Length: 192
Image 1 (cartoon, rainbow, N blue to C red):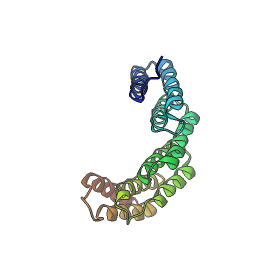
Image 2 (cartoon, helix red, strand yellow):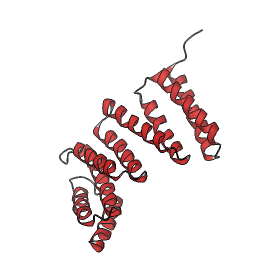
Image 3 (tube, helix red, strand yellow):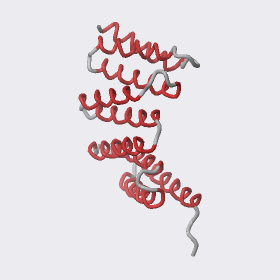
Image 4 (cartoon, rainbow, N blue to C red):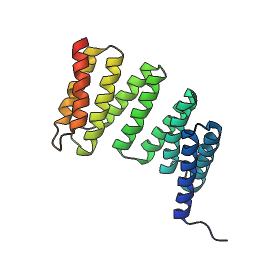
């Protein structure tokens, strides 16, 4: 008997994820849980423990754990995504995973962890590297929003002004991001 091709394994993996997502959307949570766990085991076995497929399942599991109110499990899979991306991905992908982790910390009322995660993401972004610009803008936006939510408006102003400046870096102006940053900057200015 021949070994399945990588294409066949990838198709099976995608089917498992789609089945899990279908169960989650239909609110059949125990069936969804079983499918996600099977998809994770399949990805680990066929693609490797730090593969993009495991990263993908971890994100889907985080959404699942959030929906079923299992904060420790949600945090664990988001932290695993950060580890995977730090080992195998570029700065924009690492920053994206850190943004998800920061949001998780914020929603689970761990503001110190959320803030340090935002700082870690910012520290990775280099304004002189064009490939980092989108990540930098979004991180500044999310961090500014976080600071506004914490009623630290003066700090939010500084971060959001930096975000607007990042929208003017040499490349196409990201109109929607600039508008979102300006809106949250206005909020901070009104509250300061």
